[in-house]
Structure formats: structure tokens, C-alpha cells
Length: 118
Image 1 (spheres, rainbow, N blue to C red):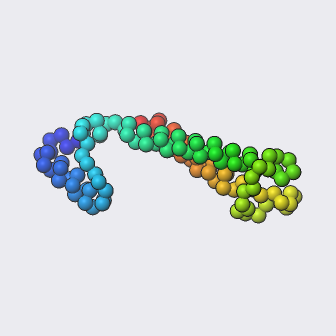
Image 2: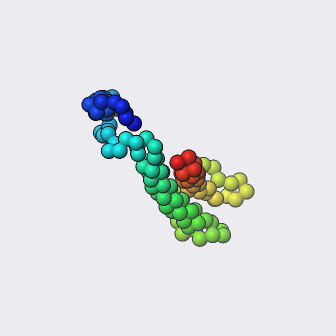
Image 3: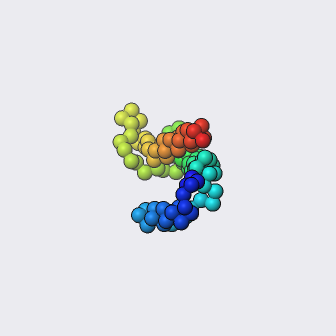
């Protein structure tokens, strides 16, 4: 918190950290709150989670729209990113939508961990 530090020292530390990190850092208005509470991190994590939930919805919609060729919607064709099935010729696996879902599930899990740790 810098509770017993000279205010000029605290400003100098922030300026030095901004210089070496090359980021536009500023000191917190309430140093005790900034030290004790993690609400800012929780908000950022929640925003990322909402973004990835939307990405997962889009990925699932694309996967459904690309289902086929014989049984399914077959409204769109996803580009082949890996070999398909030897049993089902012409099948294109929805690789990219599945990757998006894997990332989304990781971000959602990370958010849950951050919420529990806050």
C-alpha cells in the first residue's frame, strides 16, 4: 500500500514501472482498495468469459449449419483443415469450431477459478 512511504516515492515508483514496462501506468486512487480487492481483475475476466460464450455460440451454429452431407443441414461448407473420416467419404470435420469451443471452455474455467479466488 505504501502506507508509510513518502508520496513522492510512490509517484516515482509508478513512473519507473511505466518507463520500464512501456505501458501507460497510473497509480491507484485508493492504495488500500487496490491492494485488498480484486474486482478489476474479476471484471476483466468476466468480460472475456462473455466474449468467449458468444464465440462458442457462433462456433456451435456454424457446426450445425455445416452438418451433412447426407444427414444434416448442409447450409454451409467449412473448409477442410484435417483429414476426414475413412468410413464417411466427403465428411469434413468441424475443426475450427471445435478449437473455438476448447478455447471458450478454458476461458470460462479460468473465470470460474478467478471468481473463487477473489
